[in-house]
Length: 107
Image (tube, rainbow, N blue to C red):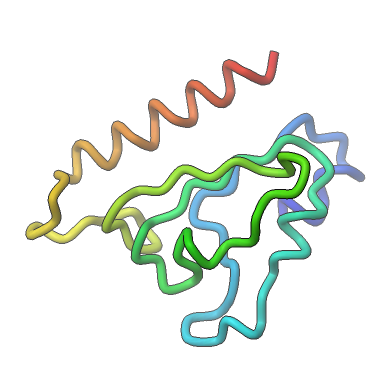
């Protein structure tokens, strides 16, 4: 919704945490057009194992339409399995550090 309404609401940017690129198991039902059409700087923070769209499934960002931060092993809620090569704490650090850096770059 944020990507669809950003322009008309006068948003300066969109932060998309776990963008639902498609329903689980239905990549043909892509919402890529919504993401690409936000019209404002956009950051997507996406879990590496998100069933609503893994980072490698996202389209290329023509003209820098959006940035993407991957949370390795993360699911749709950014939970990482205990067997993952990173801890849950590290996953949260990746999110907060990445969002802070991006937000600071907006000026």
